[in-house]
Image 1 (cartoon, rainbow, N blue to C red):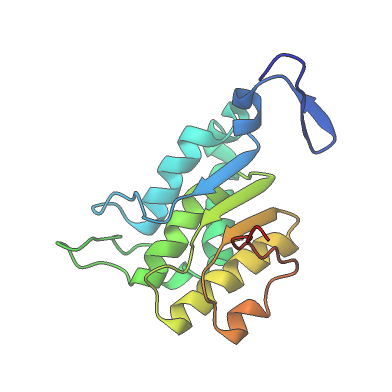
Image 2 (tube, rainbow, N blue to C red):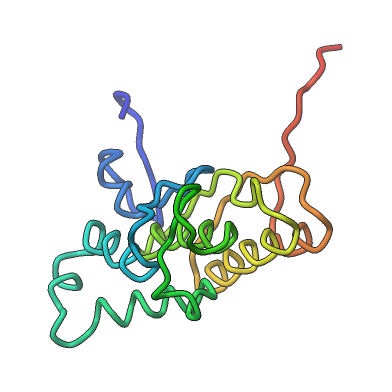
Length: 172
């Protein structure tokens, strides 16, 4: 950080952005998923990259697998957990399900704060509602969820606990 600056997260001072990255998740607007993997394989891969070694190395007692299954349940993906993700060239899960897998790729690391860049972009109204419901469940589990969203329908808008409206100011 800049000289003399201090970063505080969860009432703890952090000395670097690298320390914060273990506590923060970011879901980009466009998914970055491997089309050939199943939903569960995708989350297992991301968990292996991001979870602490004592959890990742606990294959024998099923800690990591249980955590991944819990994330799949939270995201409402249980019925498709063994389906391939797919892409525009290979048929796979639906667009709303892909978006939830993209969110799950960050959720498996158990961040304190989850930033989502337009999580409903490109989705129809029912898929958008499913995605926001999943984010709401994550928030109810104690995670702070921050999302940028444009023109949500009323049922989606009503799911948010707090709101910040941004707009251009006009100098008068």
